Length: 263
Ligand SMILES: Nc1ncnc2c1ncn2[C@@H]1O[C@H](COP(=O)(O)OP(=O)(O)O)[C@@H](O)[C@H]1O
Ligand SMILES: [Mg+2]
Image (cartoon, rainbow, N blue to C red; front, side, top):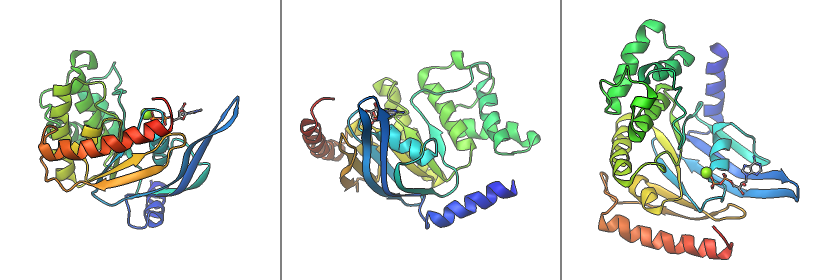
């Protein structure tokens, strides 16, 4: 435990007061045709409590970058520091089907070292935070897609991380469910003061959620441009200001896609 704490403290120092600090990161993968450069010289900071969306066409390297920040893979060049170990949430809920919703959350609490006698109460609190009171004993197959993502979010929050990394977590949901979950995520972000780095290829979703939208180009992924989003929360995806900025960003994204052929 002491080493884990010391490690977290070290990485907080390296992150220099940021939730994450990405400096001159490049990533290549070996392919039969030789090394493929996927990310080229990415530098990006996320401030404590900030909500940043990383937007780009499919295949541009968004997941690759998020995996690097999560520490699941190492950059080919450059450095990444985070304030403690980040929590992760993906498009697939990745819940254990043989455990109930509550037990899935308790497992994350257990891994974090929360004493056994506190886990049940904490799991119930987290279910309440994601508005799933009463779902403690439900199994994964009894839950709708939206409810599963709520449990996955509660499980990510159970890690008590200061940085939440989200990789297209609502991409498989229908538009109405996604809209509801955008509202819930905004509320939870405001309540918890978490830093969020959220990956999406959906321009409106990026603008709906973020304080800052960072656009990645394709082949290789580079930071093409970023926008500060000053529209007050709670926003709605159909707000005229959201639509207006989305049009501007979509134009730029189309330009990026044209420059790089397909997708
Ligand atoms: N482990 C890997 N080995 C080889 N190529 C990879 C690997 N992971 C991703 N890639 C390639 O990197 C590019 C970016 O992928 P990814 O980060 O998944 O894009 P995105 O999430 O933006 O859709 C793709 O061309 C993909 O094929
Ligand atoms: Mg991806």
